[in-house]
Picture 1 (tube, rainbow, N blue to C red):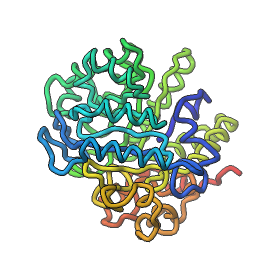
Picture 2: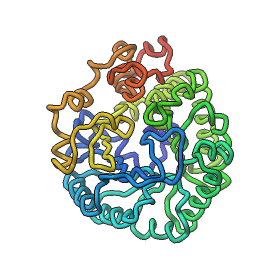
Picture 3: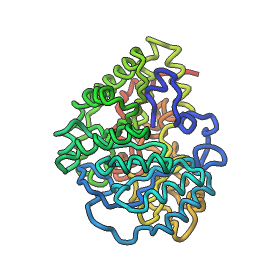
Picture 4: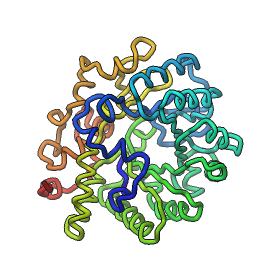
Length: 394
């Protein structure tokens, strides 16, 4: 996750400590020394929508063998013992489980920041107030375009309007809320309109996700942008971040799942604003690129531990058998060991790219989906060969 706003403006936000800390450099097991990873927890697979790009292939049905409430509470205790800083409750649709508020409150009481990834359609005024009351730090609501585009993507008519009402309900009670948008060929023309929506609805944060080829998303691999389209979208987003800043609007804009974005931003500023470019590079250096298997972990609805939510076909163990900390620190698993020190294993242009230290090979799920090898080259890298050889700053 890269904050374009942080890199372009220097503004301070909550996640900066986790993303841009010198304490995180060279860590193998967490966000910094003595702390575990951020955990995305798909604690239910059940969902009320039918999104075409769903990595968990969720449907509106009950799934067997999900962790019970008692098991989930015990897992939170394990995560607290490992000093995990953040739990991202995800799904499926996490609000489909009746014990969500019990678990979120328990995480908060244990010193873990609970956050929520949701489609927003179930957030009534009462639910919004409960989110605020139990201490949910942030609610990320998925919109993948304006009304017609979003509803087609979500597979349910009316999903856009219900999500928008969920956003408004959160804002009405002072619950911190923002947008999640997965960029692809079917919706990239709506990116400007979504940024306009942020302004008209007074939404302060958006995360733009690059498409990852996993789950139902794997079936639409050909719907990913080509490299030129990706550059055009990035140019638009960067221009809008600069415009927000010029007009004094504090909007946090992040991109997710493609660490090449940071390099692209640096290269855009290298000549026109060397001082800003140096600052961008410093942030990228401390961020360290993709850290799935290091500072980011995934736990699924059955308690299986994975590198991230897009690689659930690779499992390190189950928390019903061993503690999360024991699983996460066990480098006898070749994949776990490789992810923690992957540079020599990566294939393709990565081996000769000068930006490897700030990208770390980008996203393994995409590389594996296309090449069949977990260390295969990520085709979403949109740098040219020349850009891969540009001299780095000191």
